[in-house]
Length: 90
Image (cartoon, rainbow, N blue to C red):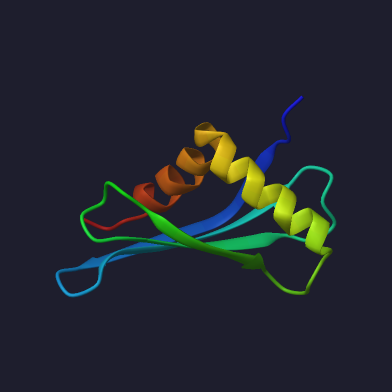
């Protein structure tokens, strides 16, 4: 069974210079501490990201499990990208 991701907040900005920059705060079911992912894309198609604990550090095992989840299961990564994109002001 795959873990449930609950999004706490999401934001995104866009500029010609920076491209798309988004941040999503989220909780993973069964993990003690929440995470924050920073997303970046020049054109809004291919995304790079940085993942870290939101407020305080949890175990390395937990964050590695989330990285594996995001790399292997596109639906979870896409869920975070969509949350950030949905917050973008047109």
